Image (cartoon, rainbow, N blue to C red; front, side):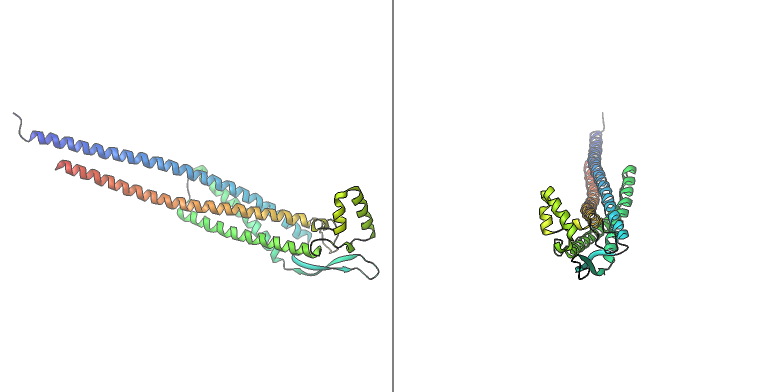
Length: 298
């Protein structure tokens, strides 16, 4: 005949076994859920890094597009900066009606130098950051929260600097063009007799140039004329048009980089919250399993 306490012993064993199985099932479910979330976050992070690499490459290209014409213009103008420079048209002498453009005072070269420096900074920083992110992407690593926040600060600073340099070059070049065209069109008195004859022939042969002959020449047309400044002004309009395109395109690219940097900081912050919540949930599950186990023992 079995002892009276045999049945309770078997009951306690079954209760303990059920509590252990529930604890294992809860832990397995937690690991699976955490693994899925980690895999999803890893894919999102890889896509974010890849998008940043593309934008850094574009910033490098646009910075290069801006640096080359600005450097060529500095060489053509022998270190003088045409931005914000003003001048007047004056007669060469009393007997000849032809006029020449006389610069009153050349503007400080800091305007051109600042634009060149901003383009070079965009060029160098984008190359360094693209190489670093490609290395992280290939190795499967990720930036720390501090590095992500530092990248956000650097990107924001570059956005402000490139925007400022783009604005300076655009406004300064428009003032130069207004000066040499006297408000938008080249004065007709600049054209001598031979130029008038050529203009009439061109207008007869090509009617689309009729308005140009009547109103005068634009800033773009004047780069083909010798302004007699002792400088090479044969490409100044094309150079600054390309430089403006490169700088404004670089600004838009860095703006996108700054937005992605902010998203990365936000992602890291959410990921840290996710880890904290998973740890908290694990503690709750373990505490609940321990409670069931103690209840079964009782």
